[in-house]
Image 1 (cartoon, helix red, strand yellow):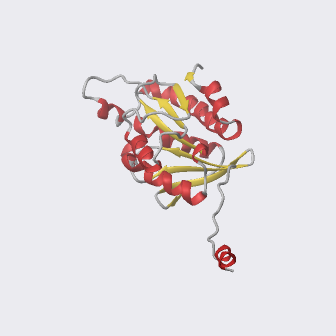
Image 2: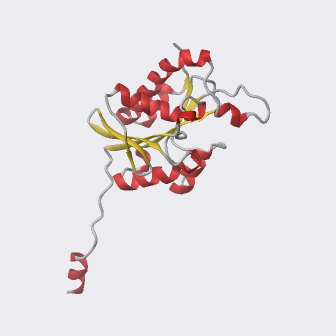
Image 3: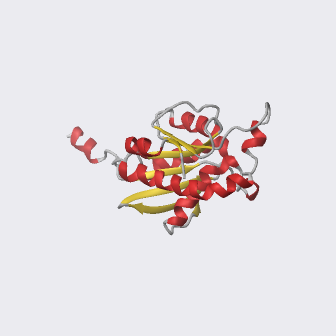
Length: 208
């Protein structure tokens, strides 16, 4: 009898939805950061949303929009927690939407990669990136897909912060839109083709 009652009052657990994806662009909020290298994650998800005719709304811990990619529900997220606390927003939306960690893709800048090159991986170290550090701490794992968008590292000793918080050069601005198209296609590929095929198709230096 007691086991019967236990089953009646056992709390229900909403299952993970393996056809739902969370794409997170990392950046800092505020107009002064809009055109900085550190905000390339925001740029990528903004570009994808615009291409798909989707718009962001301000929700808890970030701006969010939802779109369908070949029938698969895809949430785009721009955390409003600032870069160093990105993991808080990511964990909240993963839990809220019951999305598997393997269906998460975090898009961020990387100074160790040439401008115009992509490095998409299933796991890895934070590599000194504070947004990835906080994500790893909040998720308690470094095994989650990430998309590193190369911004180059043309700066002198002690000038890293100035560089990543600096704006694109005029030459980079010219090339940026076509690279954003390529990045948006990589994100869509991750959703409908999977991580392995996306890595094979998009990793490396992008040529016109």
